[in-house]
Length: 463
Image (cartoon, rainbow, N blue to C red; front, side, top):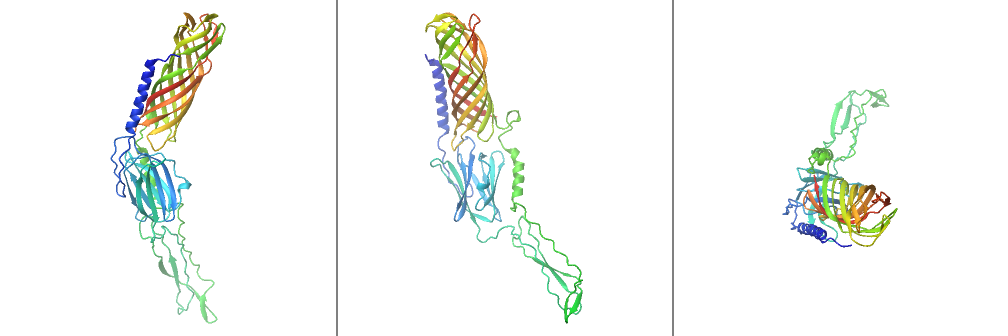
């Protein structure tokens, strides 16, 4: 198969541009020392940092919370006055980690909540079962397979009592006593739960004394309460605590609900969030095809061809993407060996081309990690129009016809984030179709084959 040097030079030029852009944007960023007040990171305007995972570890003297970051990020943190909530405000961040589950609720941690703030920031709220103090927070640079990590160590307050400790009300009824025939005194211990926000966490029990006539009777020279005494009122029992007694939970959920629409991902094209457009150019190696039917029995080889494609897709934010794609590929005929309409042809001069116009529905899976390079796998099904365009060999017309057949493709590649909207990608794909049927110059049908190995480079834009 004779290569087309012009097509090859264009392809490798585009591939070189992809590698150069990825390397230029993949330089290590200056690492800035973090503290509990502010972590300021001077960095060029590149893709927005993201949180890819959340982990919680138990230690003898602390509970450790670790956030996996794609790159350094500025942050501040504060602990609530009663110690039951820790707030981490991140200057620029996008949440890509899976939602917190039961495996994250261990040690002092009972709940995680994340809500976007402003246009690009976010707040992570950590709720605790009992008051905590923050020992330290620090940023760890990449090492081994791990990228940047933001670490927060939570330590229980030694002098604090658990918040919202539940104490049932007690009813104290003193024994009857002689009061010179006067009414006795009924003492009720009344419990008033403290308010959930602020206030003294150790509100004492207040005792209210009520004067209430209690009929007395004499038994064996002693006074005792009469069996027919007035029924004693029962104290009102306090309501049991809610499922989650942390006073910050409702406020955080309300803030999360209010801020969710403010996320800067945009409404997407046609109001669909996460929508993107993609365009690619590449080279295609169409494999040798065997044609058979009537008087046409031959093997046909093709030149190195070109192709281009475009797609509209949706990033589902769970590592999966779906897209609708249109491709066009053309490969010139190189040689035909066999018979055409009963006439024998040797490997001689061949002209014309085979073209493939395909409409595909694809699914891709991104392997997100701590770098700007994201490997992916993809596959798709669709419909293809395969056509012989003025295909001849040794001056004999083989076919000038087309047919529609099913098509499938699969492959993989890697994308490089340039900024929040743009990314470059390079990929390999294998495509194969059903056997198309064509007619020769005499109208006699014959069947053919079409499969190809394609290499593409392109760009993706998120709306």
